[in-house]
Image (cartoon, rainbow, N blue to C red; front, side, top):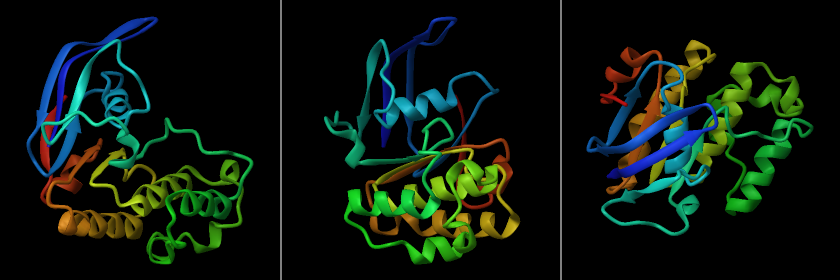
Length: 196
């Protein structure tokens, strides 16, 4: 279970969170709020990729020093190297995580034919697939997906939902948090809707 305590986050132009507290009780949560209200920023803070001015995150009632080993995230805000091919990016992730090439994920997302394309030349939907493949490859107990169905074709959305349905089977203390402008797609698959 992820819990946010006394979070304060300010960018130059706006206060995004002020003394913010939130407890995510459900195993699968779809986080909802209008654009610009901090959904992506919150996921980045949970993943340890963005620092708040103050406050902290608890994972199953504990603070974790090296969050990156416990959390996997897919978000457009995380810049992947534009000059590398999708295959090179995935292979680098495999090497860093000591994992085999995720052939099942690549085939399931129908990404095979795009492996040798530079990331910058991929469509937004195929960039999303590359991000998702890397996120699922890690198999961390806490999975954070920012707008995972955005720009995906219907077959890839079905494969995504299949992955999400089985993701927590071997992670009894794990949790999935997503953001989505299409919550009805995920609510039919066991996600609880939660306002920011």
